[in-house]
Amino acid sequence: MEIHVDENLCIGCGLCVNVCPKCFKMDGNGKSKFVGEYDSLDSNEKNEVLQSKDMCPVGAIVIKE
Image 1 (tube, rainbow, N blue to C red):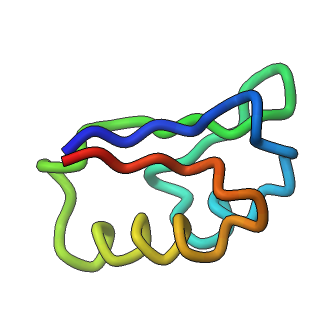
Image 2 (spheres, rainbow, N blue to C red):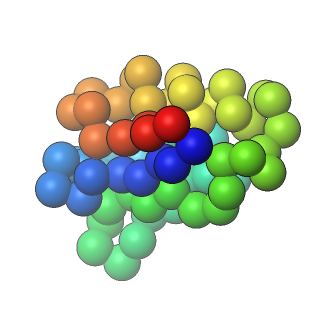
């Protein structure tokens, strides 16, 4: 599964970082980035990633299977 944050859509609200701090980090431009490998996450972390995607106010988190 491929996950990334569309930096053109990201408004830097930090919600995804709060929900899943292991998987999302803010970069130097104030935008969120997905870090790590989805397949290596445990089930709780995978749920947090999906929750972050659902909660993103601008739909910037993109998940491709």
